[in-house]
Image (cartoon, rainbow, N blue to C red; front, side, top):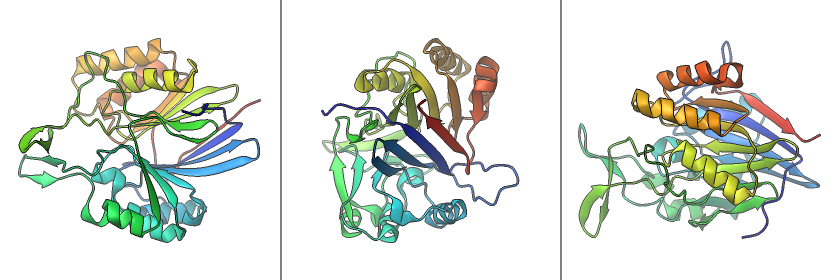
Length: 295
């Protein structure tokens, strides 16, 4: 793997989340999407992390924020769920260029479903198949390894599951060797940015791999122990009080400077995060922008 490098500046715009800023014109949706604008020397890239599930709402929010799809240089899909991937082919057609890098785990196109209250596929939808993505101009980079997208921004790669309390809490299934088995969500990846004089910024989709596992892997692959921030979904909405408390305690011990979590995080987890981190925590909202720059 090439050296991760560092960023001079990073801007993150929240284009999709379940909630929106107060008195704003943005549209909310059950899903997540973030635009990263990274600057490293003379190199600038705009990277979209996930696309939500409602293309019209995503496009509306981009236009409201003054962002044209044509500026997007790469797309990262953090995992297969429809509320993070639905409409990616339509977005690629809106970008209107060929060979837009689309980075994901190699198992992202697998059959992925729930059985309650009835069998239902909840993974990549037919309109966003591998063939449709490539037809729309996407160039797939499917790998378990970390990918350096530009100096200072990389993916986590497949996250090692090392904690004893972070489990996949959604009852999802897949098929292996003709058998229906629990889906361990091994395709769950995150994006890691290293900002000069700040430290690591972790952008998560749902953190199915466990945010403590993700944070520890981010420090390892980026070669930096300083955690500036975590932004995204932590998927604690169905977690027990004990798991929420252990997770927040783990984040506090990792000395994360600040956290903005929403989407699948859940109100109880947000309340505990606020109790522990105080003003260093904020609920995630569509329309938020975060600016980080080195001195």
